[in-house]
Image (cartoon, rainbow, N blue to C red; front, side, top):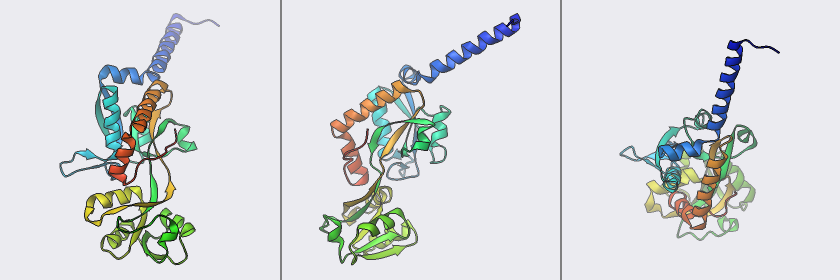
Length: 263
């Protein structure tokens, strides 16, 4: 097959562009370390994982995890606010180097991005006052519980609760929380996100984590092909797990230690 000089030049240019793209696709860690900045997508509207305080400063478990990774890499962190809908596209289009935004791992997502080891729990659970002795679901017998009608925690608790548990079902999370805070129920079954926010805003309740209903850990999203960056992130997570940092962060924001997390 013969090519003109112009066609041959175009082919060479295309090959060079492809090679450059391939190199960039595998060099995110190098670029981060050279620039001394890592861009991390985080939630700012989903407490206690990510929100803003009265001074509009980001705070939460995911924010602390982002700061930890930047610190261990020796870089500054640029927090990129995202929503559930755009967090993966931001990673794919390189608007973010990592996504730390209560990201669950499933087969569909694994087709388009890679995942680190898990760094935090995301769960539905039963909460109650520290003064209330609940060690098992049997201990809930005869006690009242606030749940959001039809929510996962409503469904999961119904599977394991004794028949004499007094379910108080409400139409949304706000009503469920309000009932528990007002003392209308002795316990509440809800997600870690909802409970964490409730406990932060109402420390006078003395509420604490009691029983696990369902666990779905959070993972860090990494662009496909960025194996060096993923390996480095996994090393940081493993170290933080070993020295208790992950447990400390989870207890601070979620009311329970991180515990055993999948790798």
